[in-house]
Structure formats: structure tokens, C-alpha cells
Length: 332
Image (cartoon, rainbow, N blue to C red; front, side, top):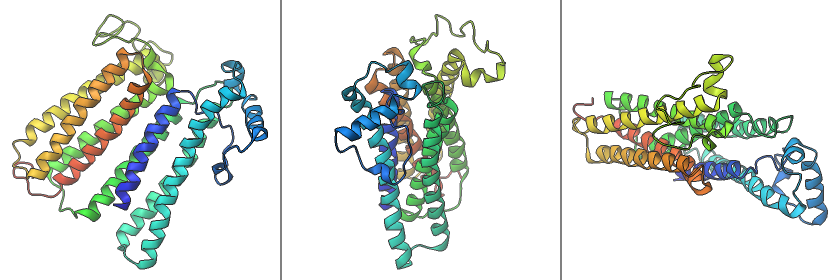
């Protein structure tokens, strides 16, 4: 339950991160102070100092020069909460971990997995600051590469927390053919989510807001027209959005096929229920994705779409784990 609680906190962290990004609040704190950064501004002098620091960087100089100290507070608090929540995850993970280590209640293999998770959490903090740094130089926006890496590392930590937690809750058997297919589908889901990171990093969701056609065409003119061409999937707005659309469609079809074939595998009720959860999650995520696009990234829908990606990853992780229990007939 401790690990599941940490996974829930990571999920909330991703939601706060999406809200921070969509409100363009992520560059409001221009220093990384891992320990003293937990102290919020306490008086007018503190606010003036923070505002003065912010005013020296590109986002203020090129976009937000109109902001007063009061306006600055609204973007500061979101980023402050985002960073504070990350520190809180570290504390909630580390203190019980030390307690369990002291009681010698963790087996050797699990202990090393948990140490790896703790290190990954620290690296995630570093990655977050590395991402923010990219928006403090010339362009008042973070690098889409670093944003996607930050998101991808969050997904990796989320999956690992769930997996180790599930292994403590209900130890699994040997891998089955069904679970191996599940792993491949999970990889596709994560890959699709990461392509969404490039859409977010480039603000590519604010263009071509029609569905199913894009710019009036199924395959729009100008696709992959970029120099050099190999950078188009990462830096060209049209190509990045088109890739994400079609990866999402492929993921949806593959989940449907997986769910349909799973009905022939002689699954246990728990295993079949897990595949139902994945189907429900992918249907919800597709609906959220289309709605977000058509609404020109309305804030609540944009945040819900990012949360939906984590829900889909979580349900698929759960399904893969359940399918590893080895009682399915056709899937073994």
C-alpha cells in the first residue's frame, strides 16, 4: 500500500505538471534550491526579490513584461506546488523505506529494486531542472526533447512502483505468451504517450484543430517537409501532431485486438477484468484526445488528457502483471 500510495502521488505529480505547463507557469522559478526551496515567500520583500529574478529572463522580457508582482504570484504558486510535491514524494518514499530496511522486512531483490527507484526519483528532480534550464536562455519555452524525457521518466517510475507493489501484494508466476503480448502493447502505449510529449513541447495541439481530417486532408500537404527531414517527427508542428494522431489510432486498434483475442485465452475472472480496464481506459483516452484537439486545448481537457495517458499506462501495467499469473489457457 505504501508503494501504491507513492504511485498515486506520481500520478498527481503528472497532473500538476500538465497544469503547470498549460498555464505557462513552469519558468516562474528561475533557481533550483533542492533544500531551501521548500520555504515559500513570506513577505513583500521576498516577493519583490523573486519577481526581480524572474524579470531578468526571456519569458518575462519577451512575453510577460506586462506582469505586476500580483500577476507573477499566480504562475509562481503552481510551479512552487509542483516542486514541493516532488520533494514530498521523495520524503514519503524514503522514510518508510528506511523503516522497512531497519526492520529487515524487505528481501534482497526487492531492496535493490527500491534503491533503484529512489535513485530514479532523484534523477527525475535533476531532469526537471535540466528541462527548466532550457527555457531560461534564449527561447522562453522548454525544450520538447527535455520535456518528453521528463515525462518518460515519470512514466517509468510510475510503472516500476506499480510493478514492485503488485509483486508484494500478489506474487506472480512465470511469464506467459499473453503477458509478453501485453508488454509489447504497453511499450506501444508508452511510445504514443511520449509522442504526445513532443506535441506538448511544441504547442502543436493549438494548430490543425479538426478531426478526423487534418488541414482538410487525411495526409496533409507539407507533412515531413522539414530540413533536415529526420528532425520532422521532433520539430515540425504538422508532422509531430500527425504522428501522434496516427500512433493513437494504432494504439486504439491494437488494444481492441488485444481485448478481443484475450476473450479466447481462457483467462481467470481477475485477468479478464484487467483487460476490460485497459479497454475502458483507451476509449476514455481517445475521447479526451479528440475533445482536447477540437477545443483547441481547453485547459481542463488538456490536463485530463495527460492524466488519461497515465491511467492507460497504469491499467496496462496491471493487466500485464495479472496475465503473468499463468492460469490462462490459450494465452500461455
